[in-house]
Image 1 (spheres, helix red, strand yellow):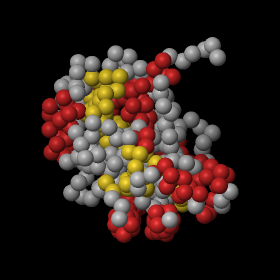
Image 2: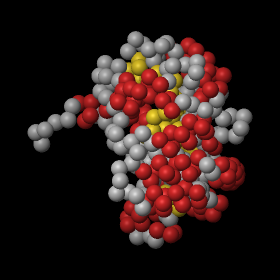
Image 3: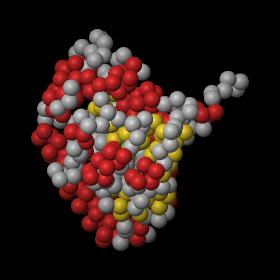
Image 4: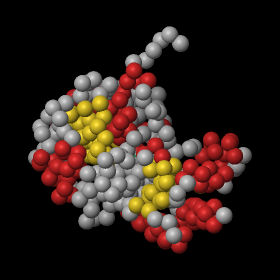
Length: 364
Ligand SMILES: *Cc1c(COP(=O)(O)O)cnc(C)c1O
């Protein structure tokens, strides 16, 4: 064809998501009910009953445009996290937040920094802007903060840090992160992606929101897709300095967050019990999977999130056999981890089925 997209767009490798259940059902001629999907870090408990109710209510009014400023949700987030209204930006998933920061702050001559094995969206939003992504080698599968700091140049605009990281599940200590913020030059924004914070125990939970007063160049991103279970509705938010939020809002679609998602998010924030149950189920499921891996003699990367990456050797081959038996997990070769599979923590029965099928494959 004669119309050509710019080189920087043509070079983008498309995002590979977890395989949808319906797609595997079609491909393998399986029933949807017999398939176990542990591939996208979704909440196996579904959503809060309060959110469920709010969704039913909000559906009645979808002929109207949503509130482009998400006022009710802004109020709820402001109260819950102790930040001012003008420090909050809402996104169509937190993926949108990552994209808004990139659109607001990158041009074709800027650079971003992220770690090897870090979340795939960082290179995507960088490349979409024609900017240059600098990948810093990981240390024990986690972020090497001093190497990332050393990679900063005059052209650096963004440093992306996922904490915990996906797909490795690794966690950076609070003191190390704080030190990085103290040292990063003022022309660089640090984007701290905390998609899995709700799965951290009290001692590890992020304190970064409290740091916003001190650091104008900090953007914290949060999502309703993981512990809150609203992945299909697409909603997340960014917390930052008011001037940074202002820039992000300038490049935001006026109605980027739909009305049903806004209502569900407000209700979700009011249901601490659901988050507590999700956390507890995750702790138990993590122990169950680790025990299963230990019994199979498999090693894994200790994880602080709602998934775990396990070393299986021929991950592509084993993944294919898992799929044939109705189990969807995530191969992570595209993250330079060709020997690993990333497995989301599911219900007890789902974890058990995965372990049983995996054991059958490994023992041949
Ligand atoms: C899942 C995930 C997100 C959240 O994506 P949404 O767009 O909010 O669904 C963000 N960052 C990381 C590291 C993730 O794993």
